[in-house]
Length: 369
Image (cartoon, rainbow, N blue to C red; front, top):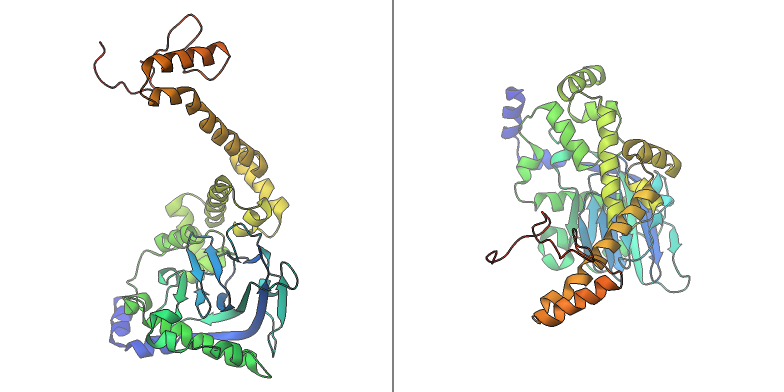
């Protein structure tokens, strides 16, 4: 292994970057109306999105969020689930065209949202990456954002209408794929420490696999894909992983997917069907069964429980709000009236017993006297 690393260090950056290429002809335009959006499920592909009109908010399952203006490009390298919206509240159902690889000559146009009102136009490509042998996908940035306003070689490829004109006429899908490869190379070349991205130090393959799972639990992982990602054979990897971690690889994948789904549920902004897809499940029923088995309650029950806790947390401080006004006599009377009316009271309080501020939920300020 040290010999391989030494050879990689002698190669020029051009040698490393020249081994990177995108292939495929899956291109389409998406015209989005008001309060519109779409999502892309996880997979092995690299997704390319260029905003030709309006502005778009892109959010990845890993937490990366960016606002793309006209002329900006986002390249999702991680293969994770992500969604594009004209506003944070917009629904984002699965973009059926981008769900799987297709071969087109001229990109078709897909209408999303209100017909007749186009707030944003996005050119998207689903492409197969060819990585240099030295590249570990886990060390690459999950998403590259290329902004025309930032200048440099990448911005030079984003000149006004360059992508829009390239997508017109016969053979445009092939031209767009070549342009996307150029933009990817330019974007990675501009990244700080680019050489380290392409020639990372050799690490423990099991630790690297765990990092891959934690970084993108929604990806369509299999034991074979994980093994290939860390440079091991399937059987050898599975045995070493189970021995080191104490659980099989797919058990760990499922656990991380469940924790990721629970975190999305607690945020309360997505539908269960969307969370299911962002957790790497194509079937909402299969996701719900696995979730219920893991947590002991269904996704909808967890969401209701979180909302109930939030409502209780919002209501509880109201009984003590008068204490913050600086009028002790009025405050005490207000609390007495609320207690008499059956309002919220502190733990340990009752009609014939004063409030007990020695309860562990309180912090005493000042002296006991």
